[in-house]
Image (tube, rainbow, N blue to C red; front, top):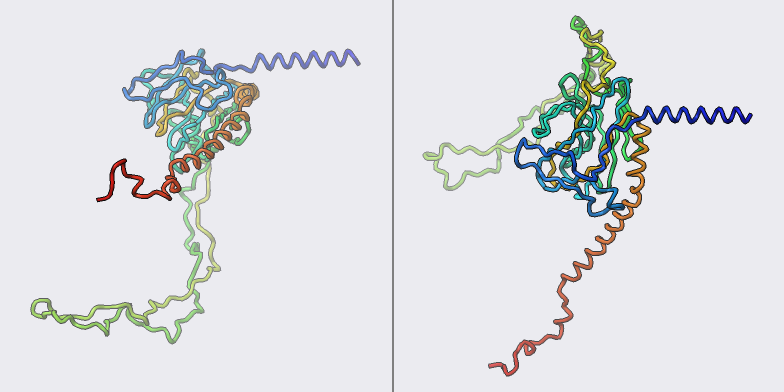
Length: 400
């Protein structure tokens, strides 16, 4: 029995060792420095970036990130990965955190991942493989998840709303070799699905048969006139307007100059409009006709929708912000969702609750400060209640 238990323990250790060897974090940017980050020179007025922990933080050493410093600016900075990342036959996982202390109302906080890039020329049209992260402007709030396939960018069909408060949030996605994805926010699983079904990367599997024609007797009118409904005998075929019988010709009207005077028209109170029979459901209604579906001759299944066409070599921030101030941190690229989520837990998870407490405490402090400031600005009428004109006179002055 003891030998069996020991053998099981050894097997467990070996399995764990194999897992550790297989799971790899290719890149983890903690922003201890700005080394390797390159500012684009595509235009001369990109917004400035700097290292910052933000106004509210739990651990200044661990929470330092890259901050977008200016309002109403485009930003374009990138970094080359320490080694090219291929996901041939295995998952790829990307993750990052972002904090919007500025209460962002319009701006992007997403990342782009590139196979090839001239870092000095990074701009909005630079070709990327993946664009992932929040994008907010007014009432339009969505988690961007765009994949490039055969040179065309394909938008995610689903709509997922990102967090819009001022706390730090982490966005993580796994793209797997079976052409599926898993989406996580703050380490919690929120979405999963199929690359083929939720992106228009491939033509549809079926199309309408061009030879299929609508039958001549097909009834597609849902409603019809009630054949039993007849026009009421008292229905008046009156005109819509009548001459105003109370109108009087103006006294200054000159027929020779103004023409023959005619009384104006007014709505006819007896007008009921053209009579129409009531509408009823058509018993012969068959629904909207649609051609039968046939296999699409140009459709061809691609088992490699998930795959980066060429290994990833760069990560970039290429966004516009009306209110600058977003702080990016802990950009991670790995090949195992469990390992990446472990890192997320050790970074974001270690401070999230304390950060929320600090934000709530600061909000309470601000709420208490506002009434006090308002009271300080309000004039004190009691000080002037017993005031008389004589009190304003300087010594020696008197009324004339």
